[in-house]
Image 1 (cartoon, rainbow, N blue to C red):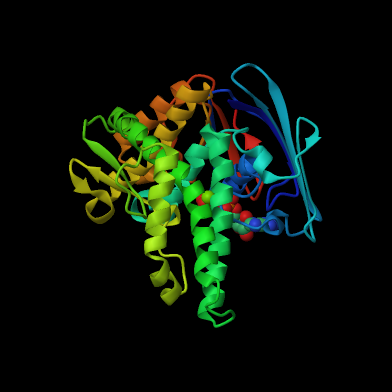
Image 2: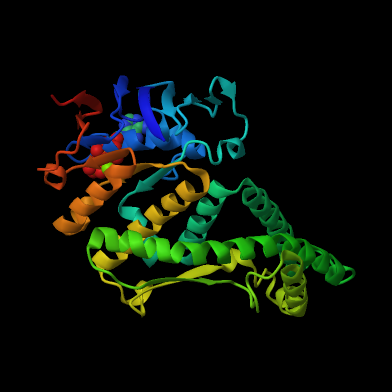
Length: 378
Ligand SMILES: Nc1ncnc2c1ncn2[C@@H]1O[C@H](COP(=O)(O)OP(=O)(O)OP(=O)(O)O)[C@@H](O)[C@H]1O
Ligand SMILES: [Mg+2]
């Protein structure tokens, strides 16, 4: 996929702009605080229907503006050009259109505009809490399979219901009568949705391992064994068993821990507690990885995710690199730039012109960002 052009107004500190992009490499340089990340945020909004930085819609509107409006035209692999348009108003009004059609729910955006952002936060994928790795799994799987997305939502609903049942019971808000039965009903519902989630996550982690390992060797220049092991938050004998068998196994396990859940007043097990264990040449990265190693693996994981999207859906996601090259040694940074630019449209934002100095990819376009103004460099 690629972005063809964009027009923006009222988005954070950015001045009104119309930009047309290179199908290859697009570089934005500028000092700290000038608006580079804001631009990447504006361009990525339609992929998720929200800021990838987790900002609220209201925060995206320029301090002096009433509304932010952004329109982005993207071309798919098959040559189809689609426009993504959104308007955010003060007080919470939001309008989102794809190809002129209103998109009332974020869910309808899933899997359309395929983008991947790499920024200094990316490293938390390896270093941070399990939640980030679950989000990574979910994002990857949702991008491949809409059924996964639907199941995940159903699971989360059941989890929420069961959690509030347990919380009410713990607070004394309801008696013992019928509690065990109600709990069992929600546990069964959870198990029914958990089964396909666990099976898909296990399979996905297994497919991802060798792909990520190849990608990693491709830009570090050093072969190493990268292992990605799916660690479910439930004891499961056979993670890729048929869903019906898994569901039965999970149900009986949840039933077994039911009394403990009532005592503790919360859900004690399920895919919401899953994790991935990552190791490089047999060493656990979360605990022992060097900074450069953890960064490189985090980048490789995301690139591998893009590769799986390509294999399954023949779509190459658009890549956004926000200030990540300064954290890699020069050789890695250059190999990464070259390897990704061959296959993807790439957007690079950097405060250090050094990061891209001397790199002359074909069809590159460059801009300077200063106080929110984006001007193309000759
Ligand atoms: N809603 C808003 N309206 C106006 N300005 C805003 C808004 N939100 C953020 N800003 C301003 O945008 C600037 C930050 O822009 P951005 O994060 O894009 O910088 P950057 O060029 O990526 O810098 P760095 O190199 O430090 O990452 C800040 O000065 C901030 O005050
Ligand atoms: Mg920035």
